[in-house]
Length: 380
Ligand SMILES: *Cc1c(COP(=O)(O)O)cnc(C)c1O
Image (cartoon, rainbow, N blue to C red; front, side, top):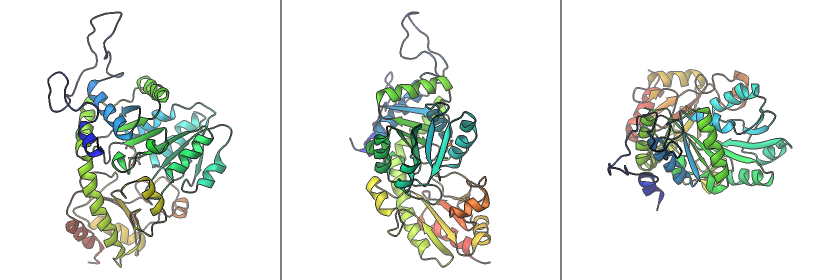
């Protein structure tokens, strides 16, 4: 079946006991057994819960993996995946990964003696040169945040295979609707389902999809062991989000493409970052591995930090907030939000200037969004 259909019917699309049109919220911690020597499929809800399982089946199917797993947050998914490694192991990580991933690697897992080299993953040669005898995995994210740099997923997967490393990627910005890294040779995909997958800015959730039975079993054991599982209510909300993901993402991408073109024509805007623009340096690689350019566009104000802050204060329709991927447009300011913890010189060296803002485009009418930005650009 096509992906649009699988978004609704993958995994378990109805209650097997009653035929109910949505999988019930199994709000329970334990399951009564009939035989003390032979347990049924469910025993304790940290290990398995039918609502969470329906979501896990769905993400496995959508990403083309052997197993899907649902976690309490995107960071819980990433951190549990990192527990696959041992003290003394070395990882290569894209230098512009999500801030929380950077933080957990440089604080908690550093304390745990996991070594990490951060590299510009858009340059495959730099990744190759960072490989050491003790390297175990490469972790990338494409498009990256907030500059939407593109990493060649098939190239990374080939490097990983050649050196027997795990290839892991955070697919939050693309969702399985437009990019399926397991099909390109990746081993593990993680998601912040908080963003486009749930899509309504009302839940914190994480997902992982794994290629390979054995790796899937290992990660399942870690999920049960560490216990950062997604609860049944939030699993249900995330499943509900999945059903409209195809329609939402198509509409949001279409508006974002128009928005990127509109921004390019504005005198107040000095630079626009969007992989859908033909002059984006990663444009060609991106469209080899993804079917759409996503619904996040970043742009730099010609007036610098003052103009960016004025815009953020003046918009009325868009939420000025962290996060992305909701049905409502969200305007964020990397300098004080996602990249606040990065020292200013380093942030500037990476192109994340004081004049840069990031827009996650929602489902509002294009004209209302541009009117809101025009209001924000005006000098009065
Ligand atoms: C938000 C986000 C995360 C973290 O997800 P949470 O659900 O907030 O824990 C990870 N990766 C990316 C790309 C994100 O945008």
